[in-house]
Every structure is written in C-alpha cells, then in structure tokens.
Image 1 (cartoon, rainbow, N blue to C red):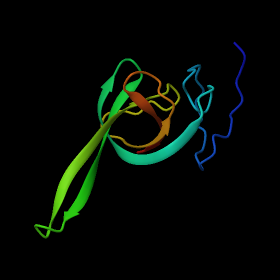
Image 2 (image 1 turned 90 degrees about the horizontal axis):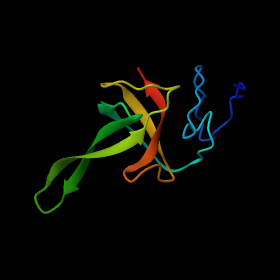
Image 3 (image 1 turned 90 degrees about the vertical axis):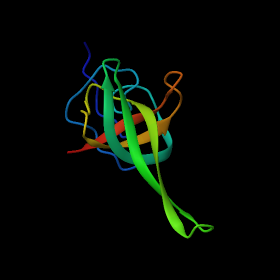
Image 4 (image 1 turned 60 degrees about the horizontal axis):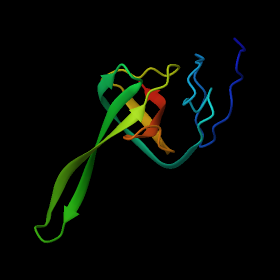
Length: 111
C-alpha cells in the first residue's frame, strides 16, 4: 500500500501522528472541512466509526429572567487515526453528509 503524505486541512488543525486508510478522514482521505466547529464530550461509540457528541447550551429567557439549559447531540465520524473514546472531549467540524445522520467529523481529541 502506498504511504500517504500528511495534508493540511486548514482551520489550524494538526494532523495526527497515526495514519489510516479511511476515505472519509480529512487528514488522509479526500473529505474537505467547512462550516461550523463545535467542542463536546463523546457519550456513545459504535463499531461503525461513529461517535455521539454532546455539548451544553445555555440561553437567557427574558420573560422569566432565568437561564435555561439544553444540550445538543450529533453523530460524528470517528477516523481510525484519531480513535476517540467515551468520555473524551473532542472538536468536531461540519462537512458534507457522510451518511443519513452523520454530517460532522472528529478532528481533535483533548485528553
């Protein structure tokens, strides 16, 4: 197999030291990153290179003069070179739809 060179994906993200043969990996495949960037916690992991990422949102309700808590959950692609585990804090970036529900890719793990 031909060794792939690390490529710059932009947005200030550093390529991981491991390499992979994943076509949806932004560092070693041909998927491009664009759009929104979120930071959240991995709450669930599936064997199909998918993780569920959750983060807290706080909004002020002027009518009641209080804050309301809500959380967002999205499914993200977990490339083989990154391998995020349950409980890790990760950075995810929006990309083209990879499947019916996956529109984000994990690009960095904060251990």
